[in-house]
Length: 197
Picture (cartoon, helix red, strand yellow):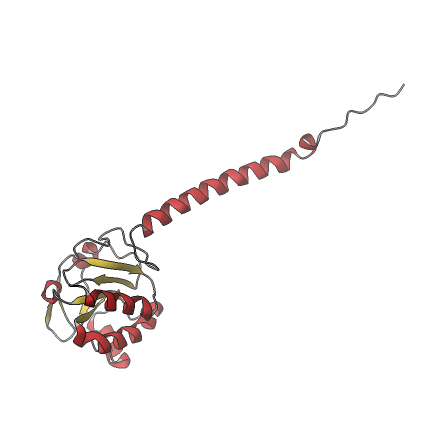
């Protein structure tokens, strides 16, 4: 009499696939949890389209600095209290920085008589020899200063460029952006903050 062969269950037949699927689900859940936590931390309290910096952050007093501009003047941030100020960390070799500069030139031309000041801080290794020809080529119409380790550290280490801070009339950071942003992001903030008392 022949013995009936016991049929394997679906689980027994496909155990390898089931184990792989469970591992992928667990890894995916861990990744999503980490991604959501980091997104929440990096954008909490930031304006729309902004990637907030860890230090200094929105709502904090902007660290003061005194830097030498490309024309030899001493530029002190706190001297611009009463104006809305954009401080842009950039470099001549950085493609997204180059893309933003024409917008900053236009914004400065448009709003400089309405209580707005644009400031650029170059992080170029070559200093003036890199920056001056670039300024001439692009027709930069606002002060550019050469960055120092101290100002970079004061503004959170500057993990990527461009990194741009929008500072209100009282010296508080109201927007912090890492990476390229369209002109409309800055224009909206300038218009809003210049109207505030």
